[in-house]
Image (cartoon, rainbow, N blue to C red):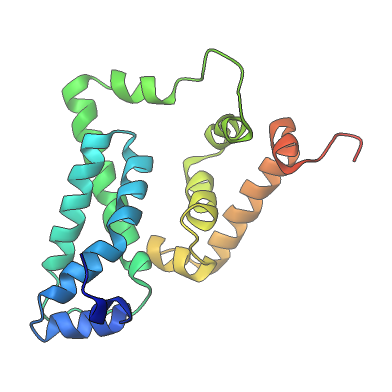
Length: 187
């Protein structure tokens, strides 16, 4: 676990400490972001073992940036593209080795009716394009700001805003989305 003296340090201070040779600062960064990376990796791969591999590869990638790493944005903004690209590679590898059947099973629709509001959102998300779904999840699940999303995906801020708007409009216009938001057709 991270030492108490490092808990209060900012990411920038931890990066500076690590650049100066304090290896415990890397441990602090790892413990601060491992759960976030794991959740994102699992969401992108749909496979626990692949997510663990992505987690390990992400922090190996980060470790390779030191010494000399300069943090110019939020750590999540820096890590997101690495996790995303590693997850894409893991998905390709899994499809090559399994013929893609496991990936298709992950995206199959449930055979029974949704049992909770959270279950209602899955069909809505799958109806969105991957670009719109990714932006929506980054904003509301990963809690990234629009500028952070733009930086993480290396796209213009206007594109982020447009995709987010379209995704939200799709959510609002679907019956399941209206139920999720507590609206009725007569509203």
